[in-house]
Length: 534
Ligand SMILES: Cc1cc2nc3c(=O)[nH]c(=O)nc-3n(C[C@H](O)[C@H](O)[C@H](O)COP(=O)(O)OP(=O)(O)OC[C@H]3O[C@@H](n4cnc5c(N)ncnc54)[C@H](O)[C@@H]3O)c2cc1C
Image 1 (cartoon, rainbow, N blue to C red):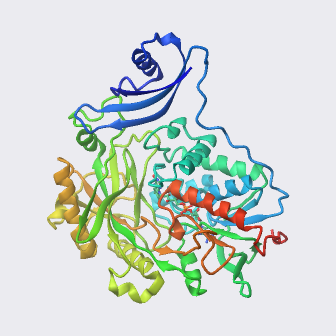
Image 2: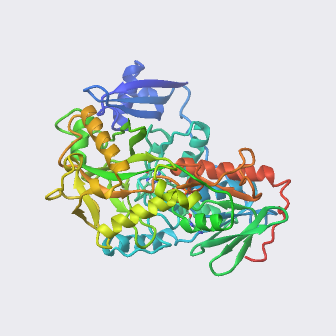
């Protein structure tokens, strides 16, 4: 028989499969050897009470049933090397890669064009960025195979309500090498040490089934049939043309793409985003606060997380992309910028906990940028990133301030150590940030400090600037066909188009666009695409 059993366990009892088997046997009044097989279906930590507990749902096989089925049946992909239809996918981030997998499922040949390098070569550029401050504008934390998701924290939770689609993305990641735990944890996480392997496996699936992946291939323009108001392909930097309907999955840092669209008169809209700083605490302090124990997390619990949100001056102030046991990284995508973000390895073992602390900003909040029209939020981002870079003496040595000094508008005489490799220096962040942001952050920090004793700490530092929280532009599309509202054959997807805010939601959006494309292809006038240019 198969039984689904819910248990509420001490962290130690949930730590190993042997301990779990004992707990299940106890709850079912069985001997441990009477359990033939068990599989964790769901697991979450409940740290609301002083004694932290782990909630686990386990699928158990007893009696005549020898095994419990796995939650994910691997997908089989067909060969599309001689498919009648092809799709051009600009960008090999989560949106682009999962769009490609979906295309293969539908029997459409995906051609991925990626401005950056494959993940192995990209790793070398990222090392140079961290150690020497050298920025390759095509290969960095934002650009290259796997997109912004590769050297990221790899948190996989999403606010998307489409649980079915979420399970498919998690299942595909598992199929390509992610740990089984992502299928069951309430806060699944992969880590930047494992993500590159998974990304390479996805590339292998795409290539093995007849798709193409071109690295070092930056899309520079759209090919448009003006008579039909349809996109027929793209031009790339070296002048080649790739023909077919286009999934535009270039992410939130592809500023040249936004400028190209605006220049060409393709409808785009300014989009609200959030800007602020990275806040870094010692991880042990966060463990003590969240697990209510001076000993911290102990042997059985993972590095603790937190999440805060409040309102200040009519705008949201909130923690963003928290990385327990992680590091702060320079997430610049070009020269003359200072941008930070956070990532962690699978073990989340660093001594630091960091999180974006950001203030919601809407188009029109900074009237001085309104003349930039559709690109006003992009202009604001660029202006602030440049301001921080200049303050850092044209280096990536980031401005920083103790949290306790920031709230009383005082320079920090010294700074604690930080995980940020290019280094930090004391700076008046309260003055460097526009008042619109710094005043709200200050109030937010006071509120968070009252809600969580110990969170407002002189051991915590602010490091800036956190400005790439989402896209500064939305590329409007038809709700049904997911094509651009004015240009048939153009499918703007993922974070860069303004329809996703993380790895999973970007991947879902990429898949949805190709599902829509497969439905539209029957009536698509350029379905017979020209592959002579390849
Ligand atoms: C350091 C860091 C940590 C993060 N941590 C998390 C996390 O833990 N969990 C989470 O859910 N999200 C995280 N994110 C955000 C997440 O990575 C993005 O939401 C997600 O990658 C967006 O996917 P995308 O495919 O839409 O765009 P991207 O991942 O940005 O991919 C866009 C791709 O397009 C390519 N490209 C750009 N311009 C062109 C062009 N002109 N021609 C060809 N190719 C082009 C880029 O090189 C890139 O590969 C993190 C981001 C960063 C930077």
